Image (tube, rainbow, N blue to C red; front, side, top):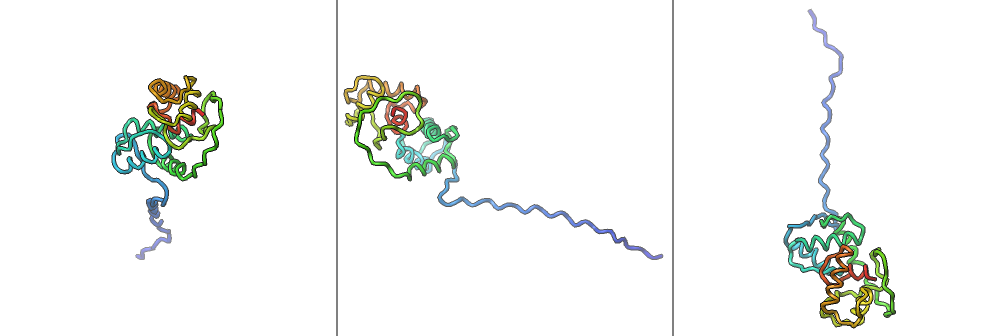
Length: 188
């Protein structure tokens, strides 16, 4: 007896999916995530960049509650997701902000305090440095005092500091009594 061989096609095994290669970090892009509890040089670098952007904090390399609050203030100002985590979007925006050329200060003109919320840009340009208790820039201290509706004597003393802290608390800013860029931009 002869055996017959069937002409039925045997299905080929289905191809295995080709694994996608892990994307390599894009040069110039931030592909790290920094959050509360992290420590080290990357945290210190973040803190120094935030200071250069006008925020008041200590660059100690420890991502604690103060750093998280400053990151939140930065995220709020630039309409990013406000989570206190310095991920790629926050870090790239911070780098972009720092790369912007600083505008030369315009001659001072009297301004009236702005009411309402800030859109993140100041009517009176930020001077480029923090103003705090003991500051000797009486012109800008007086401007701040007028905006806070307190006696404008040009002296940044305890009353001005406590009024700045109360203002920062009302506006959801980092409450440190120091007028950095974020506080300045909401005042002006």
